[in-house]
Structure formats: C-alpha cells, structure tokens
Length: 319
View 1 (tube, helix red, strand yellow):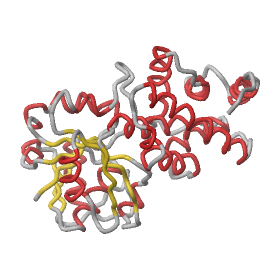
View 2 (cartoon, one colour; view 1 turned 180 degrees about the vertical axis):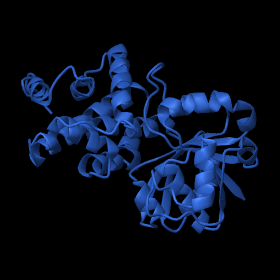
View 3 (cartoon, one colour; view 1 turned 180 degrees about the horizontal axis):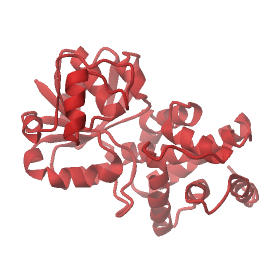
C-alpha cells in the first residue's frame, strides 16, 4: 500500500513522516522540481519543518506519474491553490480517493475544499482538526476529524491513515468539518491581535466564545450538524489555534496587534477566509461582527483599537 501526499509544506511533510513510521509506503510530491530534488537528497525540510528527518521510505518527487501510482492522495496544498493543482493534474488524479488537508474558503467562489474535490472525484474526504506539524512528525498524540462522502469510505481511510499516535474520528458531515477548520483561523487572528495589543486573557476568552457562536451560526445556516462544531474540527481546533503561538494565524494576528510586519512567505489562510466568510455571511443574512473586524484588520482598514471599540460598543443582548 502506498499513499501519495501532494504538497511538501510543513503539514504534508509531517504526514509523510508519521505514515512512513507506521510502515506505509509514502510518495511526497513537491510542486517545484528543485525543492523535490533537495528534499530527496538532504532528507530534511529545513524551510518548512526544520529538525525533522524524512524516513528513507518516503519518496520525494515532482513526477505526477509517481503520484498516480497511489489510489489515495492527500491534498496538503494551500486552500487558495487547491483548485489549480487539481485542474492542472486532473488526468493523473482521475478516479482517485482525494483527501483535502487544507482549511478555508476559496476567495474567488466562497467554496470549501469538499465541493472542489467533488468536482474531480466521487471519493472525497477531509482531514482536519487540532494539530501542529511538529507534534505530528514528532510522534506526539494527535486526534483529528476525518470527514468523508460515505461512512464506508471513512472507515477505509480511518484504517489506512490512522497510526499509534494519529487518532482519527470519522464523520460524514463534510460541511461541518470544513467550516470548523476554516472559521477557527479567522477567530485565531482576532485572538492573536487581542494578546498582541495587550488586551489580556479575559478579552481573548470572550473573543473565542463569541467567535464560536459566529461559527455555529454559519454552520447551522449551511446545513452542518451542530455536534460537528462541538468536536475536534470545531471547538478543538479553535482552542488550539487561539491559544498557541504555534499557530500561524495566531502569530499573524499577534503581529497586527503589535503593529509589526509579518513574513509574507508564510501562508495565513485565516486572512483570505475572513474575506470569503464575510461575503457568504452577507449573502445568508448572518451577523458575524468578529469576522468583519478581522477582515478589516487584515486589510488595514481598521487598527486594533478601533476594531475593539466597534465590538465593545455593539448593543448589549442576551447570550
């Protein structure tokens, strides 16, 4: 059995390490041929996952033919590039089981990963939940949500992808799973900005709680199951990303709160997701003030003091 992973970033590399350590044959695909050759020879992803050695059983390649030899392919590419990667390689990916490992909404269409995958395959799934790449690669206990188009597919992937340290909980609620993974990044930016501006842990707790309420409102409007948002892909992921500097979205928000610049080469899905989620919320008639504030912060239309003033002066109401 061989699994292919498209995307040699931190998360794709971490999945390659843990699956290979479990005895699974792994092909790791890098979009850039030079990157693939460097990783294949040096066995360390120094830029994205420093200090972690890739097992010898992981084959790193830029060749889509090697990817096509696997029936299960994990799509560990950024959300905003997912459609393009699928389109460019649609022939090689035809009739494969595709598992999205990215979180967010496509800005141009407001579409999540599940709908995009189903344009290219009938066997689609999402792997999401509270996890940092270094924890997974280091063999630390991690639990994730595996959402699939059918319970049969979910069971098969659960057996195929689960390891001693990577525990998977399955569901067929793909909408709920992807919403939790997407929207928590928006709230994490807000929490990072709150701490960066020195507003304190109590303010962060309030922002997390009211942010979760926004997540639940959108999930309900889009037909997700409420239990899904209360699980790993919603509340679990929200807790991790809003309280740890290991989260890129939190660090980005922290930089905004302090008025610092942030490394533009680091993918921050929450900034793009805030824009897409706000557009979707307006279409659905859903009130999402924290999402609106995060979007305004990330686009430079508001500073942190003004954003907090807008939130704090909203009319008081019942919880």
